[in-house]
Length: 319
Image 1: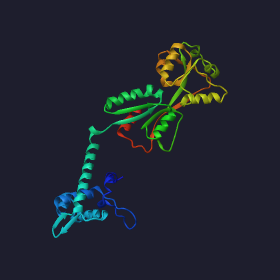
Image 2: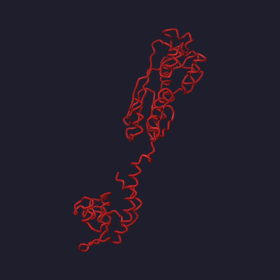
Image 3: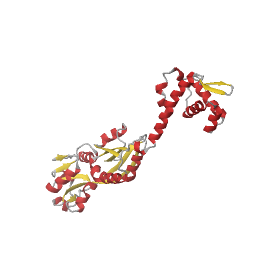
């Protein structure tokens, strides 16, 4: 979009800037270079000197001034012999032209000045990825770009997708079944295992081929129903005539892990959430008979979204 289409709106109420429609009903569009040419002719009061300074032929300068005069249906210069002077309408036009060009020069200066930039990045992420994947990325991002301004929203996948669609978030980071939309760009898709986990002291930790029915009748600590891997588990159980009854439902996996370590019981979590505790011998994976589940870790942004410097920096690290 021509930047003058924005800057010029406040001046159109003046008759000197009234648009003249062509025979086909289409308006001519003034360009910045025409304003620059007009300003230089007004300064030099000479078409030839203005052309020389701008690196144009004199005929090009004449054509550009003529285009302005036709577009705004006015005479900008009197040309008597070799002498050129501004008309009264030309003087009015010059005031507007100076103002617009000054604003354009100011805009170019500010947009190219690092001190004026706001390096904002709006991220949406689910809780499990926030603590176990995103925290390290944010540390590296801060080390490389301490001037960034990052806002993070933690919410269920469905809510994050909606906010990305309405341009309230730049990038969303999910753990879910593979989701697709023609309007999205998926910058990352990585498979993650979802496992049943218990205290290393639990009898279930030392057994193989534990039945699903036995697992779900243990004291159960779970993430909230209705989203990603918990929803997938509920659907799996419902298809087999079973249902989960939880002592605790909470979005924060860290609290669930603490409950498992201190009180036993069972939970269903991404393996990346518990790998440190399993390696340390504090928790153990429950080997459930004929059961395996995976989810996709996915980083998504809208196809129509302008990919900013900040988005590129984040996406580079998330890989």
